[in-house]
Image 1 (cartoon, rainbow, N blue to C red):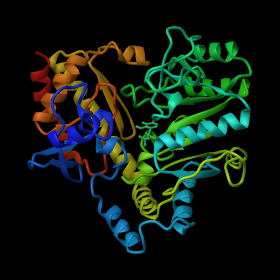
Image 2: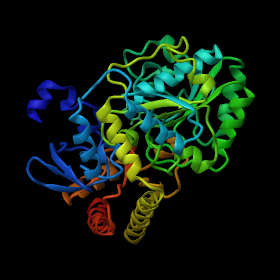
Image 3: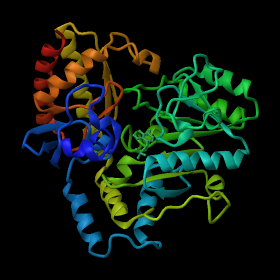
Image 4: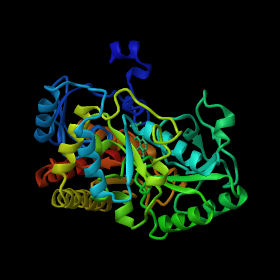
Amino acid sequence: MDRARDLFPGGVNSPVRAFGSVGGEPFVAARGEGARIWDVDGTEYIDYVLSWGPLVLGHAAPVVLNALRETMARGTSLGIPTELEVLLAERVQARMPHVEMLRFVSSGTEATMSARRVARAATGRDRFIKFDGCYHGHADSFLVRAGSGVATLGLPNSPGVPAALAALTLTATFNDASSVRALLEANAGAIAAIIVEPVVGNAGFIAPDPSFLPALRTLATEHGALLIFDEVMTGFRVAPGGAAALYGVTPDLVTLGKVIGGGLPVAAYGGRRDLMQRVAPSGPVYQAGTLSGNPMAMAAGIATLDALTADVHEGIALRTRALVEGLRGIAARRGVPFTADSAGSMFGFFFRQEPVRSFSDACTADVELFGRFFRAALARGVYLAPSAFEAGFVSAAHGDAEIALTLERLDAAMAEARH
Ligand code: PLP
């Protein structure tokens, strides 16, 4: 880490890895296998970060490694259409029929920024609505914090984001459709899209109220705006067909990432054919990528989706629920204010008694206690996301034994942390 700090800002190549909000030093990883990750000193951890979501089969899944070996022997990048792109796209479409056409890119950031470009081009409008606490990658005008009132224009929360761009971002409150309606009415005819994490993972785990996503669908249609589901995290995690299938709401555009690359850099945006046909070279909306549709990345995605059958998905979801129920029981026994929830293989918890429905609720949770719990868990060989505002993930490699061992260790961690 000393050498890394000299080379990289904060010693890392993506900020949350630095453990900034929980204290202590990140471990330096040497390898992963199944549900576990090892550091360079040989310490073993049960991993609930799983590379921030992609590794739904666990680390170094044999089916993924075999697909990579086989594909690699034919070249690492070909830069011209391959059959693998079609095979992965067909698998996405089989699970998400509303993805009539799509485009592969290499990161979630590219996917959301491109989907929004399509929405702006299709509607001829510049402004868009996002939700307080939702993260959609680091493209300039997504890096905007909520204003104090629902009608407040966004302020950039990173230097380097032009105020003029941030002003096009309007921020509403998750699980509050009236905040969206107010913005749509105050900006009549000016909103290109509403973009949402249908289950929030970047403010901690926050599930939508049953009426919230249907209300967004209705409001978007009424106001001529497009609805974009950012399923970079939820896609193939919350249900085999993602949040759109789980909640029965069809967005106009969807962004995917993480699981579709099986641990290699793949993301995608897609949706209605008439919208996607606006993308170059079919249409004028420009977007391109040197390594987009890279064969190794496609092969890892295909192997992952093929292994993630409905039964496998259900098994992971069951064990995720067992983990969450176990955590609730531990907190209750130890008298710690706690709320936890899951959808499919994605979960989260907050040190606060009442359920969390929005980012402002999340901000009232005890983050000091989270930091102590995180460090106590790590010291006992359980690697949780190093932030109170990140979701956790379970993989097919996390069996009943791993969940039981995790709960035993987290019970001890909770006992230490609550003091
Ligand atoms: N959208 C969501 C919902 C995400 O969780 C993330 C990353 O965590 C992104 C977009 C950005 O993806 P990437 O980090 O691949 O650019």
